[in-house]
Length: 257
Figure 1 (spheres, one colour):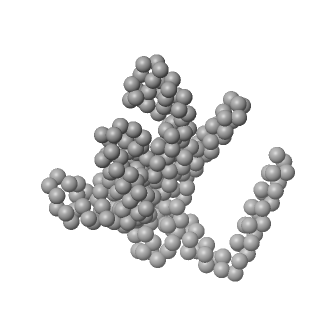
Figure 2 (spheres, one colour):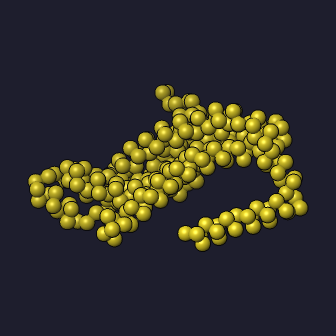
Figure 3 (spheres, helix red, strand yellow):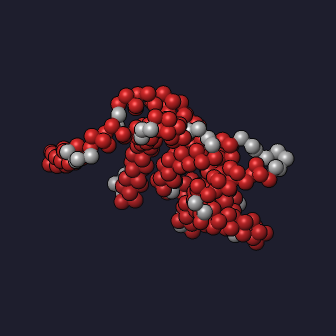
């Protein structure tokens, strides 16, 4: 423990010395790490970051609902489900193969252009729809993998107790599947949290967009570093929780718990 702490501190000191002694460090410090610019841009970026958090929380709920539906449709063996399974397969293939940025641009500018009656026109909700469609495909595959990882004997046990296929799926298989895929699901949501910044391309003033506005107005890049700090601070707790869950799952599989 002591050796690890000493080696870590030594490495950090060496890195700090190398960076701050570089010839261009003073110019980089004034451009990216100016304290006065950081204080000036902080309130506006903090207000805009609320939009990122709001988008993340709403999209997360919608993504889980969509992904669970798609995953269940793809594993149900009933023949009459064939057309729905085909639609679910095409959906996951298309949206997993399309960059999230392109999905946001297509939905954000394409849906209003259709001029459909009742279609949302607010860019915030269009962004939510785009994130849901993009991440729903990834999360659906994670949940489907979890369902398929449950041993067939669990299905047989449920059916032997007189449960229907749906009841066995709901009360026996899905709880086990979701518990197994919780760490990778949280990893996807860490990525989602960062990708809310992509909503700036359709005109939403979130943290990154506000930082770009401040940066363009004052010709400095410190506001962008401030915005990055907001994302880092918001991401670290979720990342550590994911690590803890992964470690707990590994210990459970090894019999340590």
